[in-house]
Image 1 (cartoon, rainbow, N blue to C red):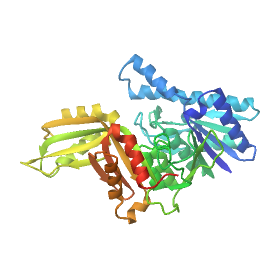
Image 2: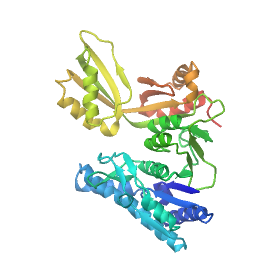
Image 3: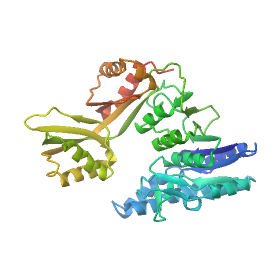
Image 4: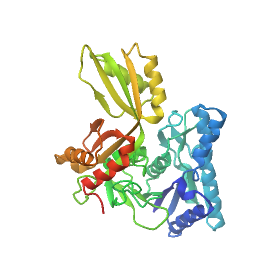
Length: 402
């Protein structure tokens, strides 16, 4: 078997952790399997590198930030190779440039386009464990570009797809995918399996178990994922195409505090205005989620929408610069907000799911500011201070606990 294993930063945080991971990988290697290991930077290395950059300049260029951040993973993989060598097993560390992991040129948030598998296959044929830097690719300028936080998951899935791996295992500090964050909802239950679509929604909505683009890629190329703990040997959660859960209406509840609401007030109430606003933002790389438009009055209307909190200053600047062209009278914003979402394929064929969610919020005395729905999820915007209480109320309202 060819197995791709990805380990996050907490799994390789120090010497003890590195050797624990090395021994776990060697176990499977000694059973005759080919092993590719994808690693994140050790512990808080990425945050520490960001802090170093901000000590130099408050707004470093994205290209130079990526040049800096990719060093974190190179430290991890080289130390892991040394650990495996010291345990008597041949291993080699490779970075994105050595493998040729081609990506787009969007520094800080690049997308993988193609992985050249020849170098990895050559090293596997030599019976080495191959250890690869996660979170990075090489763009058309032959510069490093990072894939966004959590991007090592995507690296692992891309390599698994390119090698037609038999298994892709994502190791983290939790035992699998839960119905909610167990740190917030103590009776959250681990799922044995979840569909790609449900996992993609949860990942996109704030569940930090998997990078959303890794799930997107796994679905596209049919890579079955297993999410499990690096700290124990418990069976994890399988992420695959079709899942027969116990007729569960809802698979999980997720929250996202990295959210801001922006309101453009008094724009012209005529065709094309909303398009111009959101097209202007899209061209600058701003991703918009929930949108609420008021009923027109006196020839104007108001539009509110949510964005990632990290994009707030950039969004306000873009809107201010284009205020006259977009017919905006005033711009408002609120950043003490958060999103709560429920996800489940079962809600497609069951009326009353939204009502049950809203009833749970009402019982917890949580006010809803905005609502967005799709076939497999309902998202509401609430006050940031109400998030934990709302998550527990909705989780219990749908009977998702142990």
